[in-house]
Image (tube, rainbow, N blue to C red):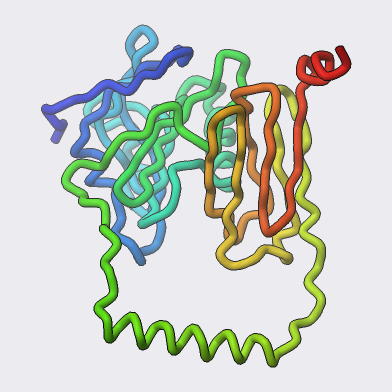
Length: 258
């Protein structure tokens, strides 16, 4: 049954407008600790606006039987995670691009990521590139409260301190083997940046920091080995596991030369 309350997702410089029901985000959301969920977005298109009306999960047995209930058609993909940042992982990007190729670039035009209590749409830029590491506009999932940090009670704090002290002593007495090099690197590909590293050398937790102009972005990259990022400025620095890498565009290099 279609949702009556609708919202509009749009952002400066983005040519696609997306109409969606906020209740749909709550319907897609998975609780923390549960397996990720993915599937198709169904809806209609009307003069540059994508109307998302329903979803079909990848495990729905009726997917192959009826792709267009009530006149709806596939208009994109979705992925839902119980926690983390709102971004497209490498496997999500591959699935997104695969759908575009198989449907001649007409059907799978948007992607939706729900992560915990936040969500965001992803679309291709005018030049065909895809900003996969961040949504142009993040939106809250209605009815989901963001967990608040709770302070430890004095007894709990003392116990935690004792445990940490014991761990520190144990770590000091234990010599770890030599870790493999992280090999953090930035490669330019068609106007976007490919950030790569050695997944076997990732620390835990593994948080990638992207310093782009005046903006700072932190991404949990555990179990990942690369990300695609579209820069906002002419100079980008990334930091991961004590290593850093820099990127300067051609314009920035010319300014330095002068």
